[in-house]
Image: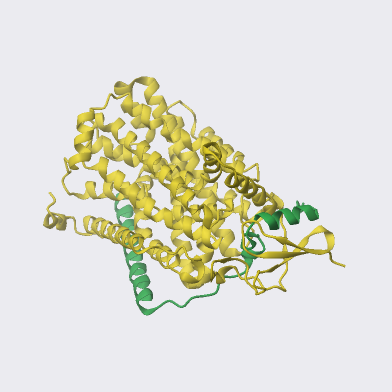
Length: 68
Length: 499
């Protein structure tokens, strides 16, 4: 069942006078423009990704050994 | 025919035109004072994140009305004068920081602190735990600024700013961490209530009832105040610690000298990782930023958000120190490695009596219940942001089906606790380690976002904050590497001065 209710003009005026425009739920649906990652940033992110994957493997290996 | 008028926006700098559309929905188009297509501006720095074209229409929702009501109270309090008005304003604006910090004092965290005290007593780990909360404060303050400046959640900013490839990596880290952590929260609830003879089924059912009751209001403000009230019970570890009549001179010596430092070995490294993971985890970033947005905080509120986070860190650190102090008398008398909450409580009975042990067990229950609420909410926020579904605690169920469905899915973790024969204690020990390992990449995204001039509206990180953030990343990575060495090549710890 839809719970959407009808709002009065006063409600709309109240919302607009109180919230910043980009705080409206509808405004938040507008996508933030993409930004290009620089070479150094990409290298750092990839290095940390390899680190996480390797370390997770270590954790699960330890869990496997403990379970045995 | 649509009806329209222009309204001065109270907290923003833009004006807006409202067109009354069909079926009662209000369509609103934004128009900046400069007459250009910018949703919000701060000084001369427009935020590309929030651009809405003049021609675009926006629907006023139930979520907007609720948020506007909260913000209207903040505006009224800000305009009032006097100490009482300032205190009221502070009361209105605190919440996400305290909740995230006390929420992170969760089941596995309190077990980790209890195991720390019971294994090593007082000494190195007392100041070390304070240091970990200082790290958490540095990290979480960035999420306050990011949420207040962009009005966007953490997950959506990563997805939209860096693309879905990196976004999905973050979500996978968050998903695995949250699911494992949720399991441990229900373990804590089960074990804590087990002290009172409550069956596992009844304990889990009770936890789920509390989890869903907190959501019934469909109102962020009510949810926040109810959860804050529940989270305050985390401070029960402080009076319980006082019941042990702690040796204050030894406590002071620990803080002054960080001594004695335990021998560097596999167990010590695990405790170090576990205590770090007890204070800084990925879900905290996602939760506090999204909660800051849902609460409607703006750039004007950032210093209140900082205070909120610092107060939360101080309270949570006090509770954590309480858990270490209370179990310190058990050091060298028990092997705490495989202890569950109820066993800690039982072991403490000779030290603090049945009443004290019961309070300790109740503290564990609270830790599990509050964290299960905050972690579930962080999952639902992140899912909603990524799937571009409505995501707010101000949403009625009908408008936020996906948001509330994710919260329902989180309760699946409760079912796992009831499967007989699973190595639950091991999950508890591992979950904080997983959190520490996942933090460095999460912090790099946070660092990049909080220094992004195009979205931060003039509140980017100053240099000193960047140095602190970089130090936290380096420390967490080093701790993770140390853990890896202790598992893969434990003999190598001897080279580092271990035994």
